[in-house]
Length: 431
Image 1 (cartoon, rainbow, N blue to C red):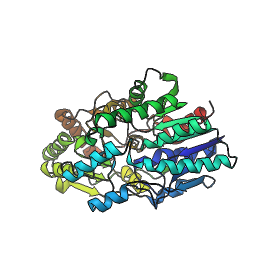
Image 2: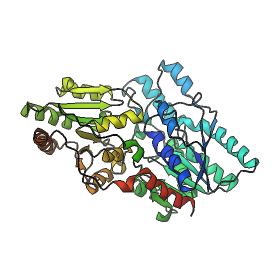
Image 3: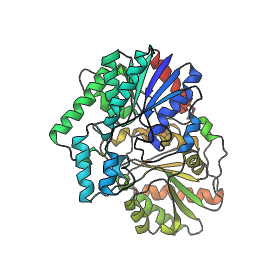
Image 4: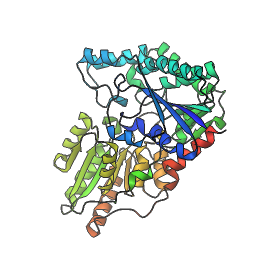
């Protein structure tokens, strides 16, 4: 089978957005699918972070076509004097600056569904050329965010009748930072119209969690559950060949990835400080690997944990995995936003593969909470559950004093390996 994959985020892009599509493409050739990837030229696109190491994951036989783009980020940098473009959720942006509020308004109302829509025309020309040369594809997979990529799939369905799989890693109009964009009524209407067209016209819709599936299925009475498929992000077994190496000189709680004030870990930090006070012989330490907002750094200091906390800037993916394996306990947090019951971060599967106890700060009964309990790896604590967080931290401290290796026994997470999940994708391509 031949699959055309259209994705904005591709190596050398780093961060969470690139992982899902890259891992699909890594395993598809071994399952009988020949892939052609169309992505943006990294010299012309706009990536929040880079990770050159991920290029090694691309199979040798995969053809990658890189196109130009027409995006406003060059002008954004010139006007703001910033060298970095906004992260998803604006974790690296000021929440109160009038300048930033203005640019968020412009982004939300003049660039619908998002500023990367300027890439679409370049991709469509590239696909038209391939088809004009006689190339055929059994299906096209469009991966988003940016959700403007789904409009490419919509256009290709109309122009060439290609079988279309819309892979939506996150909600669209319900994405957690949409309220910060201050959209007008017309902008909200237009964005919702694009979303509804994509969901109605796609042959199959892929989501990463059951709650996101339920959210999208409710967008139109014309939608049927049979076209929606939950394929979570998973973990790649080849990333976890290194042995676990928890420290013997500290009870080390590690968080990887971006975190901001919306994740509300204040009570968890307060519980950590109290646990450290009650158990002075247990060297409790925190480590945050990735983007940590100024607000969260202030919360760490306010809790009196600055001397116990290590901040590590963004690192390549393989190094991030090593940080997981060198932890005692892993911390994850779900942002305190609308529709967060369906937020199932890709890193939760890598957390599971690391076989460490997992503390999840977020909604109880959410998809993330259910997954952790299914795999006997932990569970979610409500944002204000100070007492139960403290109880569990004290339990961990007591265990650590008996044995500094808190690693869990083999977990029931193998069904979430990237290869196993890619087999599900192959079945959808062949339908």
